[in-house]
Length: 484
Image (cartoon, rainbow, N blue to C red; front, side, top):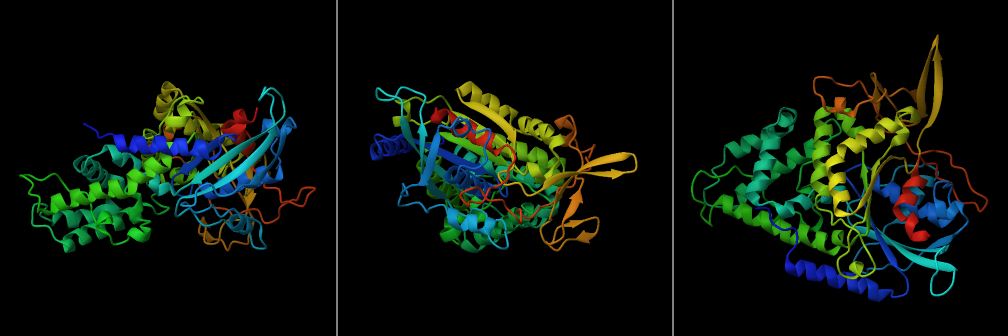
């Protein structure tokens, strides 16, 4: 039977944390927004754009509180948790808007930032209509950590069976061959020793690392901390690997038993505290997905992405919230599935990108709605890096995107220097998403990475304006109902 993600002690800790949040600001409601997604989905960019647009009153025609004239403003508030690093908003904005704009570094640790929003409420509050404040806590953490959440309900034997089965699939053999040779040469019932554990863990980590490369874009490969160990590097909790089920009885002194204990220690030391202290205290969730990277890698990566999203979303604490239940057992009552980098394709394919997103999360979205949570899928770009154009070639007209590829990007044998602007026709997404899962019917698509916009407009107050695609609608869906 699957193990429960939380123990009674965990649930008590979660309830106490929620009560502490309420006690810290009894007269100011707090909405905790989790920004999650797998590697390179654009979490840091999304959060930076969210903060900047709220602070500067950006061009957000789809954000109702702003267009209705009820949004008064926002300010950075005192950091709500002294034990969690602050999201480095100022540094990330400087990277995007400096003399040589570049994308900020990817998330490598959990961080948080609080905004206090002030707006004119349409509701009857404390016997009057008038200005109201809301604390918006934005929680950011590495996408790799998401992959660990399903481990909470898997035993070592279950996880090993899944991991080894995936490593033997045709599209993973090139990356897993060395690791599988190490496993094949190991007697899992031999006396345990650290040298064997370290050898197997190193081979497994190399397999994980190779699977994350752009050409593969595989997603369902926990443990996430193996590629981002931090202070735990070299510790027993990060020195294990999946093993085949032993043929005979397992002694407590065997290699199999030692790695099983280390797997359970990983869950106890790394995964469970993250779930309990952060993930289980969220009210809203945006799940950012780089679907284009998976499409570049082919049908196997697309199917793998679907599996990853289904496994991850099964760990969300979903359901309807009210004032009383939020004090003890917070639930995520609204989830946005966002296909990022919509600016890397022409707008004529945006509806097809959303259709693919709906297909990838169909099972998870049905479960969320059954639990009482709302879901929506959108194709967005938090910061738009390209513009659209049309190229005439004789009697044919091609809808293209225009932008500057990142240095090192290649296309048709040409390697770009990061300075040259090009017009690109990346291909049309198919009308029916199912075809993208078919190994026998490859779709000719080519998506490149582009530099951020090099010249940005400024508003009347002198603040830069970040161009976007449907970011205003995403923001309105995530927090708009709290600003009425």
